[in-house]
Length: 238
Ligand code: URA
Image (cartoon, rainbow, N blue to C red):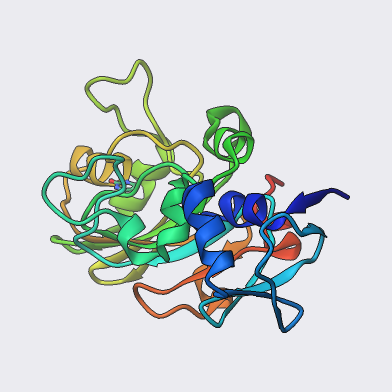
């Protein structure tokens, strides 16, 4: 439990500098419990606090955990160069809060992307030691054969890796579509594994991380949602 002044609350939630937050409050743009509050020194218990800024409702969150259904042609890097960054798909408050993608998807990869401003969570989720399985569906140039599935399960050698990398599970979905589960997150790993096995990835979509699936979140392409405790629990390794 902690009590904070309203200007500090708005600042922690990404509404801008302390000075800007104070002016929002003094201008009557902020309400708590349905009542406009114009004294920025008024303090509130942050746990479960609901407030509104410019009439839009927000819930105080110490950290935010988000899922985005990433569209193609958005970059995950901090300084995007050829395409807009994924942060442009989120409310501006999240950029102020320093929300970052958890790991990266290529600019042309679509699907489930986690984002957060909790450094410990980002670190834990990205750690290779955790072995969180990630499910990808790839559209392939050449038909998916039994031999391709067997090779990916047995492991393929990528030129800058010390040892072969294997899918933890893999199955043909359709003639040109394959599901691949990876527990590592090497650079362009799915595309490079498919290339090393003699095929070519035409399109890639991540559909699950741990037991959290994109389907259960019901997000249109480009939409995001908060992840709360029940969803976060699904991200834990087995
Ligand atoms: N593997 C890839 O090749 N690209 C991604 O974006 C994710 C996994």
